[in-house]
Amino acid sequence: ELGFKYAEAEKQLKHLNRDLLWQQKRIQQDLDAAADIQKSLLPQNTNIVDRADVAWFFEPCDKIGGDIFNMIQLDDDCWAIYMLDVSGHGVPAAMVTVSVSQLMQLHTGFLKQRDPGSSTELKIKSPVEVLNALDREFPFDRFNNFFTINYFILNTTNGKISYANAGHPKPVILHKNGTLEELETNGPPIGIRSLNLNDDEIAFEEEQTQISPGDKVILYTDGLVEYYNEKEEFYGNDRFHSRLLELNGESVKGLINESIKSLKAFGQN
Image (cartoon, rainbow, N blue to C red; front, side):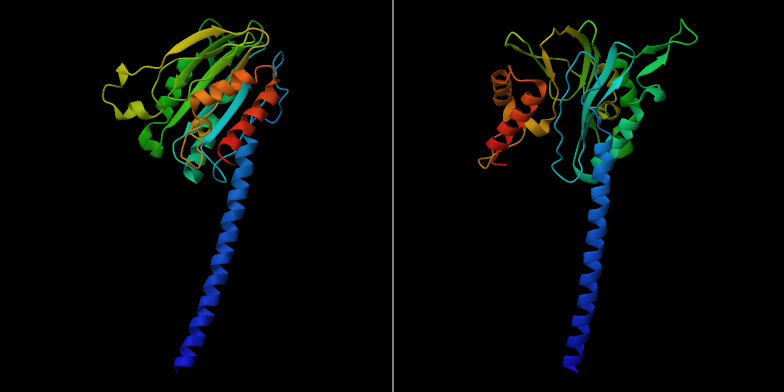
């Protein structure tokens, strides 16, 4: 009787193990498909902007993640550029990135709106207007999540940039003359103001600046500066900025590639 029970238990264990392996394979297939969908939301062509070179590097810490960015042409001269980072990792964060990226399109009214002075023309919304619209659409209690974002409007004809920041790491301009400038604007992460009864006191800020031929604008998420090594030392802003200055003579693509090499070497991959 004991031998019979053991054989039956072994048989059940084999069935459970087979089912577990099948479920694991199914989950892996779903995550692979989700990763492909998330990557499809990124720009598919580096030659998308006239009069500017573009390059990027994207690598989630898990199969999928909460970081995403895009570039959207607003008119003949202007481009919307954003980079965001949803709190947390994995599937919940990735779902929010998909939702935000679907809203940040020309046809949704989030980036352009009807010009009161014209029956046909659409007016480009300012960075602060876009952040306020996102903040209304994504209150914390909707997804139990918040996200940080940098939002730019770049005029590729005259080099003017308008920008606003909702709690995201500060972008930098690497000037052709060898200096580095941080773009400082303040604002809470998207969704946080819904938790504050005095949310009118917490406002997003907007600034303008000018870039010249040969200048480079760098946006990144905290996954870069908070990457750490075996000693639990962060890569950090100072190390990142110093490396950028060393790479100032590189092309945009070369600067990205060499920055990532430096990052991976620091953390022993």
